[in-house]
Length: 116
Image 1 (tube, helix red, strand yellow):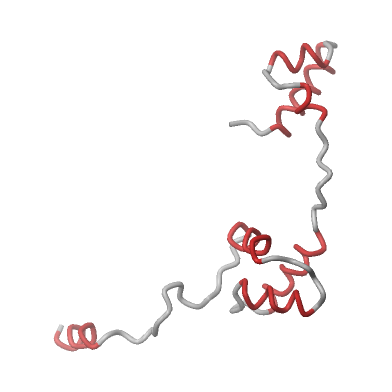
Image 2 (cartoon, rainbow, N blue to C red):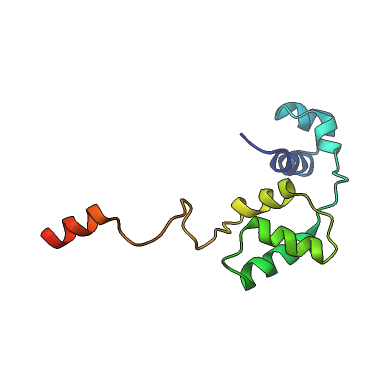
């Protein structure tokens, strides 16, 4: 599936290359003109993303909960859903095991290793 951003670029190309109107260029690639003219008014929150990256780089073992706590202490009004939206996409994973527990093998595994 092609995203609207890419389709807008294609429409601009068709208009420049072939000199066609917006309506015709949008019709060729089946893009509604309202989508072509749409401009987002949402705040990108780049400062928050940057600060989150800095904290995650400085404190590698911190998960989203501790990062969230630090951001709130600094005065950011951010919810956990917004922060967790950044976390998995950027590949920020804690170095702690996901399943928890210890890294020491169980007794059965140790016995098997000693016997073998």
